[in-house]
Amino acid sequence: MAREFTIKVPASSANIGPGFDVLGIGLNLYLSLSVSVNESSPSEKSINDPYNVDLSYTSEGNNDSVPLQSDLNLITKTALYVLHANGVRSFPKGTKIKVNNPIPLGRGLGSSGSAIVAGVLLANEIGGFGFDKNRCLDYCLMIERHPDNITATMMGGFVGSFLRNLSNDENDKVHQDLNLILPSPQTSPDFIPSNAPLNLGTHVKYPWNPMIKCIAVIPQFEVKTEDSRNVLPNTYEKKDVVFNLQRLAVLTSAVGDLKPNPRVIYNSMQDSLHQPYRKVLIPGLTDVLSNFTPESHDGLLGICLSGAGPTILCLATKNFDKIANDIIEQFKSHDVVCEWKLLEVANEGAIVEHSSKL
Ligand SMILES: Nc1ncnc2c1ncn2[C@@H]1O[C@H](COP(=O)(O)OP(=O)(O)OP(=O)(O)O)[C@@H](O)[C@H]1O
Ligand SMILES: N[C@@H](CCO)C(=O)O
Image 1 (spheres, protein in one colour):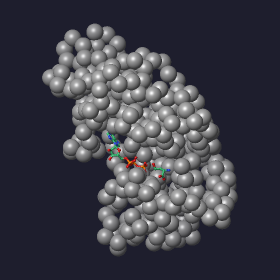
Image 2 (tube, helix red, strand yellow):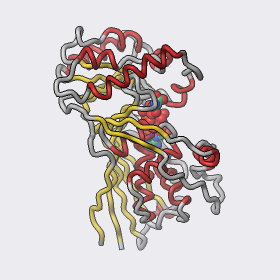
Image 3 (cartoon, helix red, strand yellow):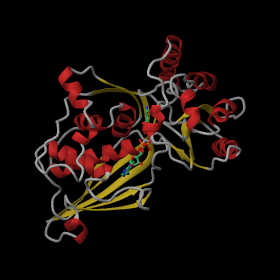
Image 4 (tube, protein in one colour):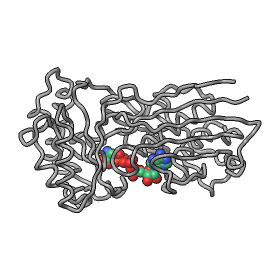
């Protein structure tokens, strides 16, 4: 008896300027997993894996840049966490997972969020738990504790989200060392991780005018989210917080307008909480953010750092090639080589498709 299914998870861009750790958009660049379970004829790779998984990658991640052992790889570690928390010790014998991942790693397009969402959906299918997307989000938030990428990826669209206030007990669970949640080769076989508290995240979807496309200009170097968060201050001045809150309130409505207003969107995508501090990690960021405006480039609506960087996200309605190539030239003068992609908002979010059941 074999079963097969596919999991398709969009990339995401977080923050969109002022919405640090709050705003995210799902993008139509998809991490996909083709999963088959054939207990009667397991492959040699799945027999040799500690949890029965034969894992392979095409595209990003296929050059030894991600581990293929199931208790080391982020997708399968996440799935194992959810399985273990719900009393299932392992993947079934003969589990084969082919990953196709076009999302560049560590560039600010939510690769880790997409991997975590894929892992939770994988466990939900394998364990037959029947969790809805909101419950799946609880498990994701146990691993990536800022909800912006995860929520946009899971739910799709343009979303705002927050983690609810937690009791002391819940807080200890949600913020415990990740090594006590995700399995590793050192994890004892009978260890049971904390289950996810219910309804951790709250989100809303905002309207998005489909005329607005997303240009991602992607430098060819990685910035780890952890490093990009470590350069941020622990406290902020009131004026900087108010600066962002004012822009956030306007931006969430402005991109849904029937006739997007470039001056309103450009100005409301300014930020004073994270981008100014991240300039030290991304050569050329100051020039790029200040030189590209709706006046300099017809069709450009707004520009910001995508997630923790180094990718630049532009919202635009036309002249995509010109905008992207001029940014690439600007980065070149700082010895930064980039590629670019024209993306659209993925409204549907993550999906699981059952291709066959024999
Ligand atoms: N498909 C994947 N399979 C396995 N591991 C992955 C996958 N995608 C991401 N990762 C892991 O996540 C790391 C990147 O995570 P990180 O949070 O630093 O960047 P990001 O998620 O791409 O950017 P951001 O959060 O700013 O949008 C990779 O180096 C890799 O370890
Ligand atoms: N909001 C997060 C997104 C990256 O994961 C940050 O900017 O650090």
